[in-house]
Amino acid sequence: MDKELNKSDDHKYIPMTSIQSRMGQEVAEDVYYYTDQIVNLIFIGEPNSEKWFLVDAGMPESAPEIIKQVEERFGEGKQPEAIILTHGHFDHVGGLVDLLQHWDVPVYAHQSEFPYLTGEKSYPEPDTTVEGGMLAKISAIYPNEPIDIGSHLKALPDDGQIPGLEEWKWVHTPGHSPGHVSLFRGRDGLLISGDAFITVRQDSLYKVLTQEPEVCGPPRYLTTDWQAAKVSVQTLQELQPVTVIPGHGVYLRGAELTSGLTDLVRNFEKVAVPDYGKYI
Image (tube, rainbow, N blue to C red; front, top):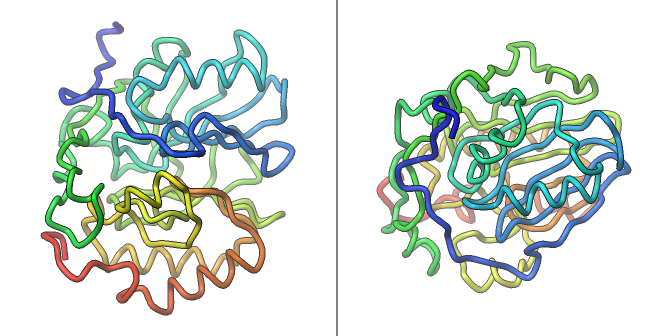
């Protein structure tokens, strides 16, 4: 292994799945998302394009499956221009170190996520006491220690631009993590929300397995700043997205997205914020 690349000390395969696992969906001619167990990663770029980008890096031990999907969409031997991280939680960077062994590419993230991507600082431990379903209760098994991707890590520019993706802007949407970002393309209202809001109740085992769609707040057991999370959801609603690809759950568009996001903003304290938990 490259001496500057290190997985987290608690890196391990997490045995979780859903009916969407290993399935993909083209949302626009140049935007495709793939569900790795329970989390989505996004490819930006037309099929067989020489220039494409990867958003997030899946669950632990996911790199071989991600590379297989890349080869099917873009061709053998293709690598992204860059990897963009919505944030650094284990289920969004699980395959990252292995991918960087395979591809020598930059990784862009918000400056506030750097401590968790350079081996300096662990995320707060998942809250097993939080109000929620079975997956919240067993969340102690989820890794929270930092990875180290060394000199591959680059800061997203302060002006909201994403290098190489002129049509897209990044939006700081903290709450779920300090440096969480979402990506937005104005010409078609396409939003990549990460975990700022999602479309499946992530603490419910049944809903994760079945991927029953509903617009939800961020995953409860890993969200530490609920006031910031509320402001972030309001910020994304103000963009008036037409389509969303969330970090967890299925993509939504049109009236279903608009009404769901409106209800989430209006009733955030009631439907998103848990009644109890150590980060409340």
